[in-house]
Image 1 (cartoon, protein in one colour):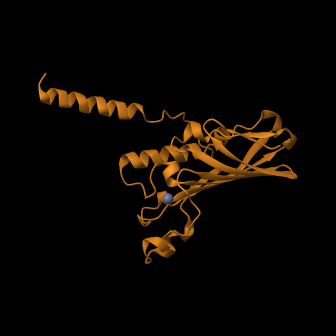
Image 2: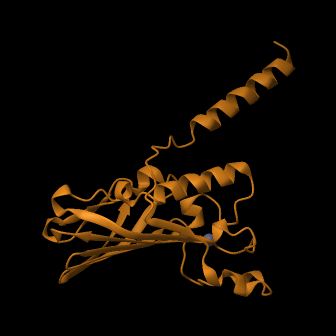
Image 3: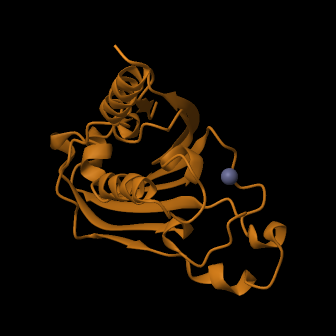
Length: 205
Ligand SMILES: [Zn+2]
């Protein structure tokens, strides 16, 4: 085999292998109740340097997303903040086709909260609203900023007494995600837990 042939073969193999390591998307239909948007205040910092353009100072540590779960009477509210690194693997506005594809895929998953948080049928919960805000969609955002994804979901549950725990399936869909620092308030109790691929249940007891 000539060197050229070996080279071509290697390139072909590497391309195939990097393609197959891409997450196989389990595409569900995005809910029309979940809005995806660019945060509004982002443009105010246009003339500042990169440091001041980072408007959520100290709010994000790579490798850890934060989540807050509040169950009050029949209302279930989940808010999350995921660093861009953990959501898509980068924190600048998507430029290449690969980055745009990764961003689209993550946004599609985030628009399907009933798959990310499979709630017990007995609780009879209905998604009522969702918002996903990210500067990663903002082509004019400054390159040095640490963009993240801020998420807010709300459900109404007819039988909240059956919500004894929350199954968190984000790790199956968002491959860069390593851990979630979760805190919860359920009726009169509260607690906190660290969730990982191996520990995806948040118990409300
Ligand atoms: Zn960052």
